[in-house]
Structures are given as structure tokens and as C-alpha cells.
Amino acid sequence: MTDQDKLAERQVHICRSLNTRYDPPVLGTKVGISLKSRLAGPPLNGLRHSPHNGTNGWYIWWGGQPEEAADFFDAMHTEHLAEKCPEVLEFLGLPPGWRFLIAGNFKDIWFDQSIIRI
Image (cartoon, rainbow, N blue to C red; front, side):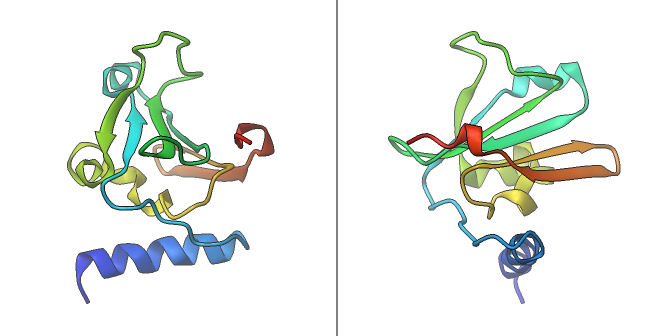
């Protein structure tokens, strides 16, 4: 079994444990990530809006609430997360509306209806 197969298996397991569908990002799509917020330190946050205009809906940042500044998030192809932010990979199979928070060994995953774009 390849590393990619193991990752997909872990993503499916997380989705099943939360009783939600498995919805991995389409290859070649982009996430919004704020690498500059890494300096803020934990927690590491992620949330998924509905895919739109070549994005897969994922937004990832460190610290508290994301800044409102237009340049807070940068676009990055999902495939680059393995190098830049591997700790989020296991959550990327969650569908729109899901969020996660990682702080050390603590991980929380929850559904937030308010983040789904119509």
C-alpha cells in the first residue's frame, strides 16, 4: 500500500467516524493558506467552504481568528501541503462545512453550517 493509499484510508476513516461523506479535494485545486500566520503559533485551524473558481474550499491558518486583510491567505495547490503543512492532510477528505483545530496532541473536528456558501 502506498503512502497516498494510507492517507486516503485515514481520511475515509475520519469521515466515517463523523458519519459524513468522504469528499477529497480534486487534484490541481488550490487551498487558501496563511503560512505567515505560522509565527502566531498554535492552534492550527482549517475550515472548508464549498469549492469555487478552482479552489477546493479549504482555508488553513495558525492562531486565533483569521485576519480580514485581503492578503492574509495565499493560494497553494493542494499537492504542496505534504511539504508545507503535512499535519492537515488527514482532514482534507472532509466535505464543506467541516472545521478542525490542532494544538499539540489535541485535535478537534466539528461541523459548522454557517461556513457553507450557497
